Amino acid sequence: MYLFSILFSLVTLIRLPASLERKLQALFPKVRERERFVAELVEKELGGQRSIADDADVAVGGTLHLFTDGGSRGNPGQAAIACVLIDPVGGTVVREHYERIGIGTNNVAEYRALIEGLKIARLYHPNTLICYLDSELIVKQLSGEYAVRMATLQPLFQEIRSLSDEFHSVAFKHIPREDNHHADRLVNKALDEHPSPHYEKP
Image (cartoon, rainbow, N blue to C red; front, side, top):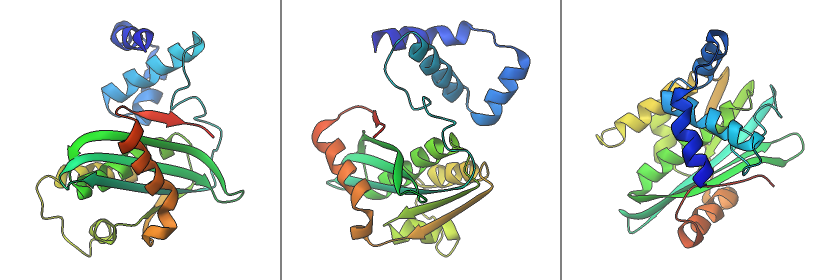
């Protein structure tokens, strides 16, 4: 990871061709995201660890299902997020992600889990993305049925709206907690074992 930190710092000094820079800007509107993406690709080519972008073009088009969950022990307290991206045709896990995010509330964790899931899902260019959450409150806020009244949730809500615009079709559906067991298990795993971001490819 020391190599990665050096690469991440040097990315800002790399000048890419204008056409490639435009493509990266379309995929990653935020400068920090573009820098991380390039750094991860460079590290991969140098024999580093797998990155979130390693399999970015494996699943192009079609429909993908995204399951997300967030939790806080203490509310507010130590919080973690998890997301699981699934290809429904074969029922296979395309990507899963889990990490601790520091001190936060359940609602903040739920929102941040969905944000991370959307960022991962867009790398696979699905024609349709169906997002499943066990937080009925957040699903109703995203549908416009409930207003987002808490100031701390407003920027997260807006970020989800912005990310959603990058998909051809995206839907948010509420499911019972027992149907979200995979993401729920990863949230608890993050809180129990991993104080920093952790990515896995099955």
